[in-house]
Length: 254
Image: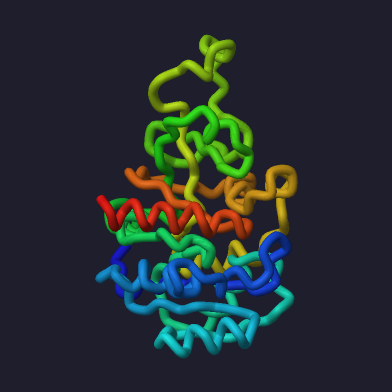
């Protein structure tokens, strides 16, 4: 398809169950949402970056550092629903979903999300994955794993370790190499697909794994999953803040 306008939307919810107010949590002295925004606006291929929130505190903080922030309903069940409201009335060919709790997002991820739309016809949904080299990371249910077909379309996403290695299962802890691939929670959609996807009901597997992308697969849609060489540290709980700060300090110190 011929892409004219790419809009990145960052959903930022204040009422998080495990970490209320986390978009405003300070990382190296700056609100987390500022780190996400700063990582996204470095991209040269985006037409606009929008922060979508249900909370005036987040809205005001974003406006203070110059971001294009919009208020959305406080009844949305998912970040995708919030994004749909934010983009429903604007002109866009491609919409990127950049999670508001991903302070280490960078242009490599954004480029990978957009690449398939430029290279193949019929692409409507994209995401990214990165190799897993750690046994602990592989078995951690907080890390979503993905397996793909030979053309890099997602076959399945799971919190369980997939694929199951029958030959090496007994000594998997001692394995050296790539255990599998971790799914990073960033998405690209055509606006047309996104609006239609928002109308579909939660699917059986989506409810089991609590992974929204499984709804697309269960309804027969394909997700192109590109590989990136970096991982990120999403902030789910307050303790994750220190992990992100340690990573940033190590990056500064080489």
